[in-house]
Length: 106
Length: 119
Image (cartoon, rainbow over all chains, first blue to last red):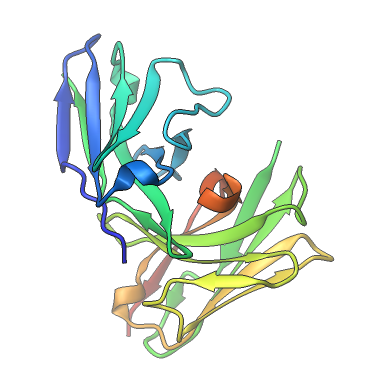
């Protein structure tokens, strides 16, 4: 199965930029999706196919993907951005999720 | 607005069969694949499998021997059955709509159902 590696936690100062990485073998050749999950809630899709934002997701959320690392970037971080973030790809007819990153806004 | 409403038994004994159903409203049912995803307490997300409206399925290899996902197109519903459950199957189970065609992302999710397996 395809393995995705995320840092357990990332901290960012209020108003600054947070970057959450997702590592995988040649992940740049795959479409990467990102989800935000607040406690007790279902995940919410925030980026799909590397760089695309669903309607309703602020422009502060952006994504990139190259080589062995995909990155979710959150600009002008707000207190409400505190959540767990998961990356996901589709590989060999199965979905693989990263282990998740807890984002803390200081 | 697409909505997914799920339900099913929340407490099972070891060796029993988990059964959950998800009803889809507000959008096309036949045009998508539909998936089940679970999350063990305090852990990450695990994909269980998916089905389209005609019953074409894909399953997580680690669960394939125990899982069946089926659809009822007359009711715009799809269901999950997981046989011979153990404590390791304790998790919040989510239903979700598959978006992104060949790259499978999930744009609409059910509210989640906590299933606890305990003797």
